[in-house]
Image (cartoon, rainbow, N blue to C red; front, side, top):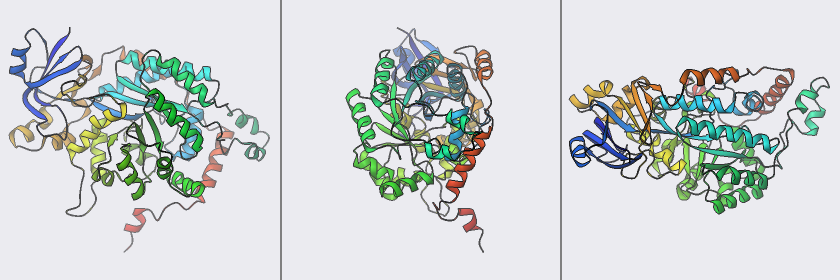
Length: 497
């Protein structure tokens, strides 16, 4: 049995919980599971002979949980794909992602661990079509990459509705394409497996005990029959679900035009939304949609950096949280500085949900930190994840206390507020997952960090604007720019005298 006492000058067992901070505290773990927390002096007497981790001068906090990611160690921007709105960006995502999945996942896992992220939720959204054997090979490489990295993870398989046609790949659209460009675009066509084939693939992958979830892609366009089948399949297998939901205003407009109701109302009618479902982005919600999420217990995964970079808008997370909707945070491989910095994401999420006006309700720093920790634990469905309590995984961060030491210990300022304002990724010294040290002195040590980065970049191919890509992007812009989906941008309104 491997016994450890992780020591800290300040130990946070759970954010936004009364009594969640212990001075001169420690976490006692056996074989990677937290068994007890308390004063260091007490735990060392109670568990003699345990390995001591830390010298008692640091801040010890629960590891962060990245509740929405796509496993891109080399970000899309670095691959040459610009930060366009989703409808335009989809062309680049489908055609331009070329990094070897094993090395790409290893690199993103290393980068996330260095940022204090100990668990991650991966969606394989931009795949899931073509011969199933090719998708199976890709998923096996993704799963192997995460397993080899040491990070805790769950992977959502992309399930595509075979009845949905890409609007720019159907016969009518292709007939309008100039003959010299048509062969290129026709080459983008790939078969979509039937749901039964996806489920057989799931069974093969799940044999190894791998953590998998389901993701119906393009849920606002999926048929009710397909969504109901996915729901039933998840129920039979006890599988969780994550999906993208109402990320752009055009998705909201499409659902209202096509079905006469919002996507959330449609999912509720199908009894799709439950506590085992998490939904990323959720920008274009109505008040009724928020009420539905409150009743069903489905989790919102907030992605503030991504929403800003892709011009999606500002998600109404404040009103969601105010009525008790569960919230988690995800970086989406689109951090505001194109990195995997969860501390920065927490800071951004908290500030963006602070409306103007004295006396207006705001999101407190400890609540925002709870979104980035045990909020994400709900998404992965792992008991105690994002906390340091008895029975929790021993997933934790050991950071320099100095940035917050004076304001907290000498002036009595709030610890959570101080962490959000002053702690930086560069202050993270050690990161442990299941009691195993994977980051030491701020650098990933679970593998050869330089070799991982070299192999990932060597496998990458830059996306290029071919004639076919240029044509389809132009058609998409023309199509959507004619649609009126929202009122005037806030900056125009506020600029008036």
